[in-house]
Length: 201
Image (cartoon, rainbow, N blue to C red; front, side, top):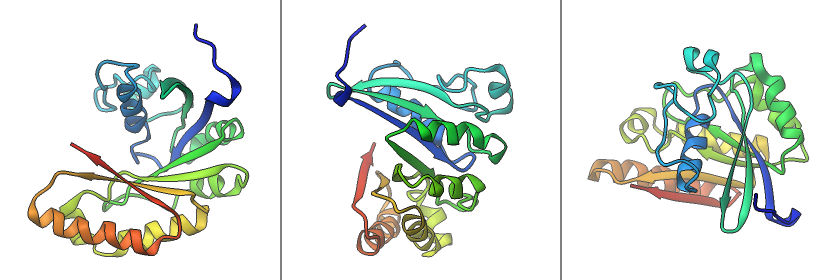
């Protein structure tokens, strides 16, 4: 087993409300780092994180799962935490062992930002928070939703004292570019923290 210096190890928790995309994000990180050769899905019950039979049957995470990967000569220990408040003790325990928290939210219609787990994350003041949005690039949903998504993200950035906002941008139609361009530009101009726009295929 490869040995790492303490300065080359990063520990972080992926937290957020239920069904926001935490397990899918964890699976994508493992795939990008080459730890797995194909991504599983929550629906199929074949993700690395949700290995327990109860999780596969219910299609939700019920316990924190420790994952690991290497990227740019650094080792990342990732804790994928459940989102339902029934299992909040799993998230709080993980945060105590984390250098930072990657808070995942879903800005698309139906996405729930006001969850007890979010206020618990806020209470862990010593942990740096990065905010990843898993739904702001749903172009036609954003057309219906209007600027409320931007306002909610702004509020979360302020409430959680976020250090970095991450949004995903995919290839899209001319209408989609018009809608998403305005949303992304609005966030760039309005939030006080740095914004990382990740382009996906």
